[in-house]
Image (cartoon, rainbow, N blue to C red; front, side, top):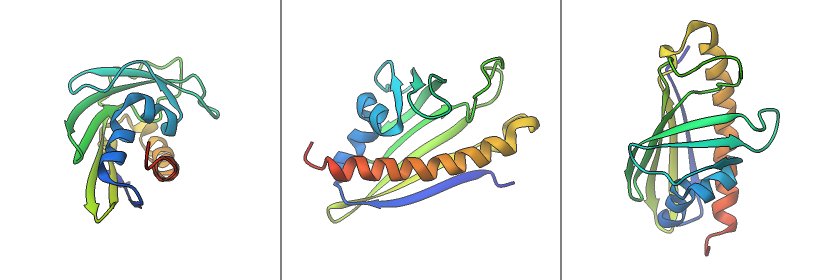
Length: 152
């Protein structure tokens, strides 16, 4: 099993627009299909609930690690934590990083999630597999979102 998931996509939108879609909790909620309860602040936790699909109403806790404007946004979370009867708080979370790079008026966005080997063995492979699929969907979601709202 690999340690990380990495997805890179070129977005036809300026870095400032992509940055806002990533770090404004209301915009993030819209394209990520989640309702977040509070703004992203480095060092703070924001709680959200998935608002679509089989995981609807699933609680997700995101702890923001770093926010470097228009460059890097990172957080930790418990990947594919879908069993309502399981306490995931004792597990080491994975680390998600969004890196932005400008290319003319476009933005290259790279999403990386690391730390899967630290998950309990009974859910490590499934979390990796599901998040690999999930990030494929999410990079498409943000692409559609920012390219449809460049002037927003």
